[in-house]
Image (cartoon, rainbow, N blue to C red; front, side):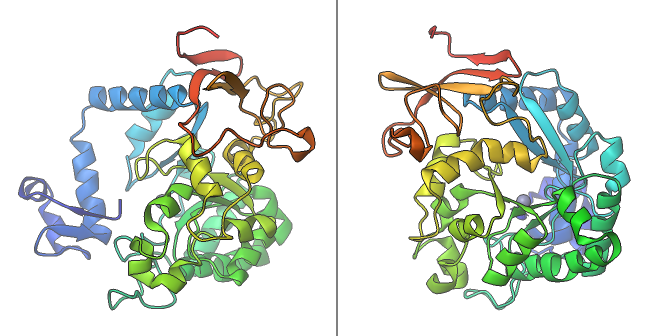
Length: 389
Ligand SMILES: [Zn+2]
């Protein structure tokens, strides 16, 4: 999602790309050239194709027990029409939209977004050497990219906070995160005050390269860390892509979920789909079985972060628990011989992540994944496996 190969035909449709930063003569595109090429490609998708794809994605989510998705749109991602169409699509799976445009608070409100955030890129990715790092990459003579100055990021935070909306940023590298946490947030706090910033519950997507100071700052400003355990499962470990990019020792410090949780940072687990597939049980497994020993979450914390945590990340504080008065939003799972009701505070079914319940924490994460039997959103069934319950 941060670099691509563009065909001759696509480049012919946007010849200006050749003059933009990030264009390489072999057709590999990054940075601005990549944004333009991607925008051009998306514009070739017809409204009918787009609607079909959106419906297929939401159907798939429902069938996997996902009752709500967070859509990270933006001018350089799917564009406005894609964003509006997805939010307007008649479908039982709830959608929370974030609009990733710097200075786009007004636009986010007009588009019906929860805030000007999501994949508002402060940097790129480790895979494409574009995540902004304080130290150089181990396998390329670069420190990556940071796309916006701290002043503009601070102004964005102030505008969103004053509008009562959530700001959010895509930030992976410690230099991008440092700009956000050590420069922009203190500058914004000097204008609107720290309590207002905390109350706004701003977000950061990914937050992978973190030291203790950055973790503390996330907690201090009440930021939600929206993290993707599948990244660690796919690219972590001592010989994975992260180790190639950073060296095994630096890579071992990535995605420190245990440190985030113990510092009191609110966590929400996601897939960053289509970067990794929608896969709730795979996400739980990856969060618990972190590739770096000691960096993972307990089953209880992972389960809470992947259920209640997602709602809290969108500032929906009444959902995520099966308690009287809460919306009837839940999934029913089948494991061999048993039914599991998905809730972090499980007083209903045979499994519980609550140690006080005195029963097993979660279905064996090494066994085949539980199968979703039914997904219910606010009392309406949005998926039923059709085999009866
Ligand atoms: Zn992102």
